[in-house]
Image 1 (cartoon, helix red, strand yellow):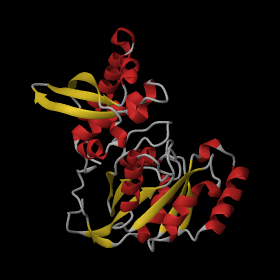
Image 2 (tube, one colour):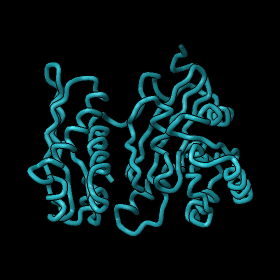
Image 3 (tube, one colour):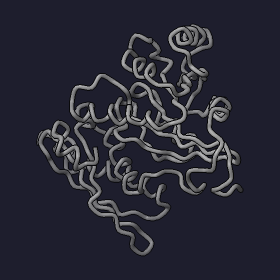
Image 4 (cartoon, one colour):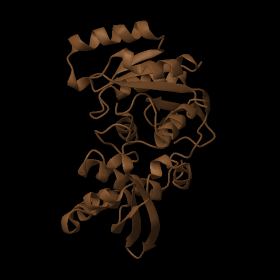
Length: 297
């Protein structure tokens, strides 16, 4: 095993692209564990999440960022700002698309961002398991004419197909220097943060379309006791009408959110978990800069 001071291929890589293309799935796949939440709904990731991928002769510090999109609300503008700010101090940019929504004319904002950087950019074409090769080749030709990418790599992040090829393209571009982090640290986010994200993920999966985007999760307490962890969390909503949907008839929806989140949290923490959830309404929090700053944006 290398020491922290041995010089290997080590660098910081930003994972960017439109919403819902599979960036979080790729991060979890490369790490071999779940630190970033996944949902079929767009704009799930709100913060920059760092995953540290280690090999015998490399360390890739991978930044999972919010999707680049046309932002209107203060929350969405903060999400896009987080994504763009992540490009400044990286060594490589991975620009990821969903092969089932490949049209370049929908990526105008992202193309402008990429043109303003001098970093090597790899195009990652995700979800290739959903199309045939005859569909894929014209898409590769289109993007090849669109921008001078360092490489174009088709993958299926969910099935881990193409990840070896991605590493082959990435590693020669990384600087030779010591590891930036010890090998036993998979991320810079705290367990409390991941727990909050896991709860939010269950809300995405279980509630109606209008609810997830109006939801934040605050971890009120995280206390380790003998052979278990006690967690108290508040689900923060924007409107009183949403509260009944989250709680559900006779509290059944809130209980299901808690039950399914607890399973993932116990797997994360490798111990028994007692999870208590409350619901609170903070009117229009996603449009209030003070509320956003209190939540860490």
